[in-house]
Image (cartoon, rainbow, N blue to C red):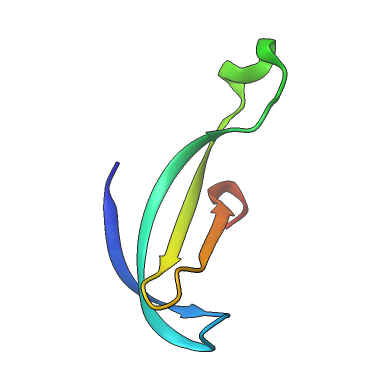
Length: 61
C-alpha cells in the first residue's frame, strides 16, 4: 500500500492542512458468496493536524 502526502481542506480544522492519503480495497458485501465480487477502491485521507479521517469510494469520486 502506498501512502502519499497532500494538502487538502479539513472540515474540522476549517482550513487547508497536510493529509496522508492512501487507496484501500474494501469488501462491501456481507454475504460470503458475494465477497470476491464486492471489492471496491476507496480513497482514505487523514488530517495530520487533527487526525480526522475522510473516506470516499473511488467510483463515486
